Image 1 (cartoon, helix red, strand yellow):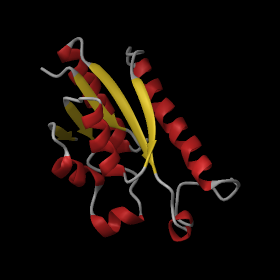
Image 2: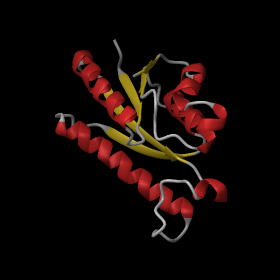
Image 3: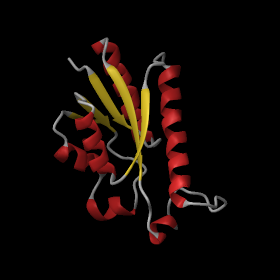
Image 4: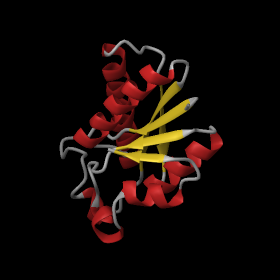
Length: 146
């Protein structure tokens, strides 16, 4: 079976579904580790106008995005803890979402990526296709899209 599962977690309904599925798989696998990864990236001025950052937040956009990503990752850990899994690790990274996910999986020798079919999305997603689709094409390990 799997020894390590990665769940890219952006807080969306799709990511929460993926996390619940990963928790089910972990219960079956037994000693398998579960890791959450929240990825953010610097937005251009155009994207900043439609981003998840509130208009009342001022300061360095990267710091604001990183802070929000940390909150999202902690929320994912809280969901896992509520299900009885307190040893779930969460990481926050910056960069192109799909490539960061795949790179992280390779670096940490992940056996399975469980990803939601739809995330929060971005302007890039409308132009280039969904993150889950890119991850399935780039990942060296199995990817479960839920």
